[in-house]
Image (cartoon, rainbow, N blue to C red; front, side, top):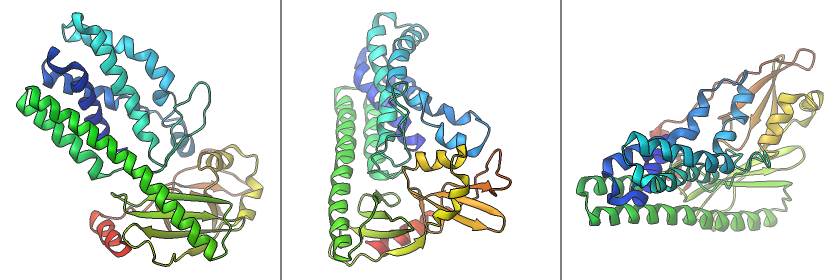
Length: 324
């Protein structure tokens, strides 16, 4: 999820744990910092764009490592804030601020390797878009009320914000399940038998859902709305060009994208360049993660990410209204 959501969540859980034992502003500030700590791994350059993509959300998001780090962080915070008597509370608060970060990331489609060192599998539920105001705003407003009031009523507001935002995450999974069932029924009616099916929300909402339908040689893209469940599913089909992957089979970078995307990838030829796109993020023809693998005769040693066109807020809103 976005940084604002993560720092707000970290601040809110820390305020909830520490209560009036320390100044609320202090708990919120420390929690906000702790809530964003795992994402500092984005500043690490691993040598190429594919490594940077697939090694984000790894050790810094692993539940075991964060759990081991929490007591040290709690002890340091207790010392820095001159509240040694509350080090146990700080440790619990830091643990929650740290682990809720990857757990929130888990709801997006990107992939979070939170099982390290036991497994490097990139877990992804895919029920939340990376930015969703309906998740963040209730949490943020409730936290601000708590900081403004600085009393028991404010603390209850903060707790209510955590409850509402958590319920919204639950709703996103219910909505995803409903969308998936309707999409599967529509595919059956159209005699489409996908090898894999992905259902994720479109930008900033959980009402309109994007589906990616994978077959051996093609992939389809379609949209389904909770407001128009009976509308025919209009699928736009595109060639996966699997023959372009064959010369790169066994090559680390190509295999890494195929693995990290859970098989939701497609190939494209541009002159003497072979491109591979992760189909989970973005939409046709502009995908967030597209990489230049070079050519079979001269593969790129350090593949670079291709520029992508992100829609403006106005464009995203226009598309949402059209698809509702």
